[in-house]
Length: 78
Image (cartoon, rainbow, N blue to C red; front, side, top):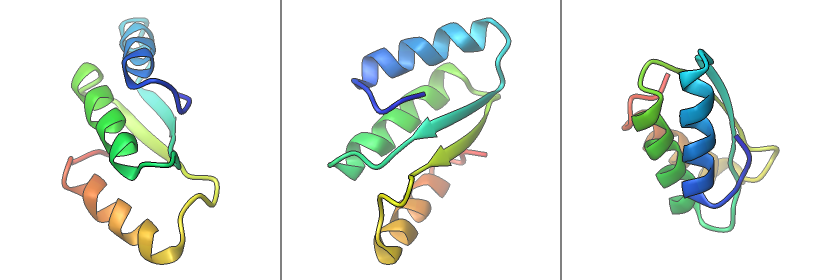
């Protein structure tokens, strides 16, 4: 799932989940980490049994990456 408008990304994930996809690679690293987290949270809601691979492509400095990981773990994303 690309970095896109959250509603578009969620709809794309919903569609693919209904087609049987259970593994999603989600791009992160937008200008606002809160947007990335919101997108992941909403995709998790429409794809509750999916496994996520989060791809930051070196978008975070080490400290920011650790904070991002902590925030994602709170969502119980697998």
